[in-house]
Length: 277
Length: 188
Image (cartoon, rainbow over all chains, first blue to last red; front, side, top):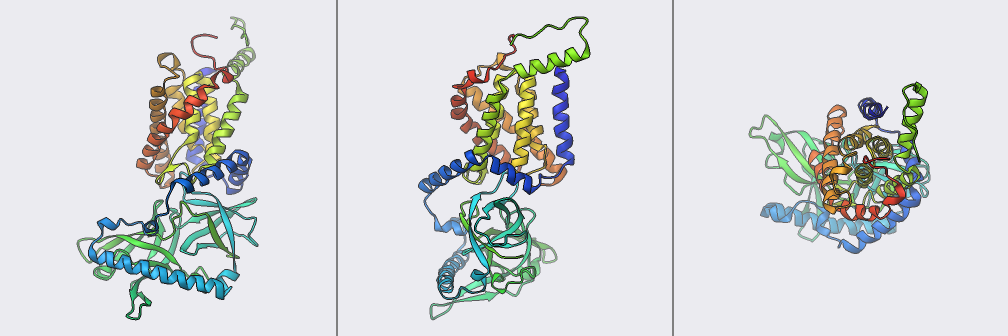
């Protein structure tokens, strides 16, 4: 019996690991709710501790290391930061002024837990949401966050842009300063990249090296431009910033572009969820 | 609990009953359930916080190591299987992945309490590190099958950071060691 137990349980575990898929989100959400008497206070204490110990570092909005960048890239970065500032001003103005399509059709909710070991998911509370459903876009004033993957009791799971299952089309743009101090958002005229999550960031593959050589630079912005999202205000929302361009030696091959999200997905605490899909 | 001896004329039912009793007697299961509940609750609650950079810390592994270094192999195996299964259901990944990983840890670590100082911090650090490496290898193996997209390097870093965190946590857990009524291999 002893040796039987020793062999039986690992064999059962091995067979289930090889054959069974991931647990359904409903089961996971219910189980998580079961642990909430311990999880909730632990989460609050952890959040308070992380707030107390981590000083906000604005440069982390763009995760590339400034020290490793060339002068050109630094100029692009500074323009981007300026543009972001301008954009936030516009955003703030829009928030106060419009109650426009995006804000009218979205609800603010809190993030209850961060990404897990294996997958890049957020768990959000659905208490404040009017009609949460799978596929709804989730965003933050600083950029696009992801999509609702599944809705459970009191909570929903959001697949982040950095998850390996995330795939959306976008477009490359660059912010250029005008003489009057304003900022122009200039599309780079490249093919629409298919942006895929990698678990740590995002990547755009299958980009013809011929087109992007001497056009795309580190620090350029990738915006959301996906036909799946019918709400016009969602188009043009920031997906990420180009952090690395892996160019092949010849123009006949494809380049790989690494993209870092503009939103710090690990410390995000509140998000907007668009009603409907 | 005093266990009956196996007699030459014992039936299969008697042997089964004896085996079940020996497994049940190897550990106080109520204490284990509380430990599992607290550690999984902490893992759920601190999911986005208990990490070094982007590397998470595996708190459930610490509970599994605590059971493995103190209990006999059979109860440790069952406890690790349950812990792993709950970890799979609460976290992501295929169901059974962590159950297999923790079972492997139990298989290799449990029952060796006579050969190591179970209360020494170095034991806690190295056994947790070893367990973390086993978990990383198993997760990578299952990942190769399913294509989840995990990083072996991240899992190994998780093992290291978890081993560091394990030292104070296991020191604290050792204060409650008597509550678990572990039966060692030395004798009943």
